[in-house]
Length: 391
Image 1 (cartoon, rainbow, N blue to C red):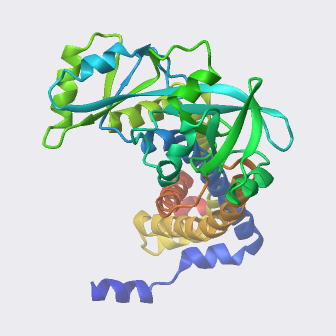
Image 2: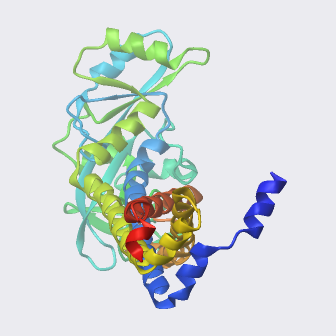
């Protein structure tokens, strides 16, 4: 290992010398790689925000097993099933409790601007802990009062005055479908690609907001398992005991069900994946053009090296050295610029767009692969170069 390191130190950095000799070409190449990296960072950031924002509610549900309608596509389009299935689930050994959760979209008026926007209303039994949200659980008794709700402080829109007023202990009133409701508490889930915000209230208040909805029409069944029982075994028992008008999912499967919908069944998930692929291809083309031009400019020098006895492997190493240098140097500005763009996106949309170490490592790896592919394509002419043809 020591000998290998000494060889590297003694080796002439031809790749860097060739790149730095044409500084304008180097800057153009780094700009192109940075642009490709920014494009990949933004698309991956949007894609991750898509999945994170739409799985926050499923992640916060406090249940071991969930029952949903087979017609449901995701949380925002969950459909309903009969509440009888919850009573039947209680007959299965190992099931400790089975509680209903009601979910639906509704238009409400912004307390300040009075403009209408669409929010997701979640109705739960206030006597049972349905969500793993400390802010909700501490204030759950509030929603036992008629027409009282908890508001998502991370909703998309101008709610600063209303939030400040509630934080001071002063309830805020607004209208939901011509019904006056009172905001008496706050929690945080956040906006998503499908909903501007969330409201949580009791199951009874939910039914008041939706007079056409029957209490027997349940959106999600929340089942808790008795200690000592295996969740998968209880799930299998439920599937054999209940009719096929409900789907039985563990919590992990329910989160995967939500993610798969946005990843596979919507155009937006495909668009973000395509954007990453397009950024990668743009980078390959830009780096190929730079390396190909560099090889063509120094083809006689490479031929001279061949005539002196250097083999193709050594010459290919020079080009790959250039590719790796371009990848590393281009990645630095390509990773810095998205930090500001992520901040702007968060402020404008309230979506969870953040830089992560895993994403930075992924883009760096893609950048390295992108430049190596470009280098491999650019060296085809170099391998076939004959010194006799050059002079």
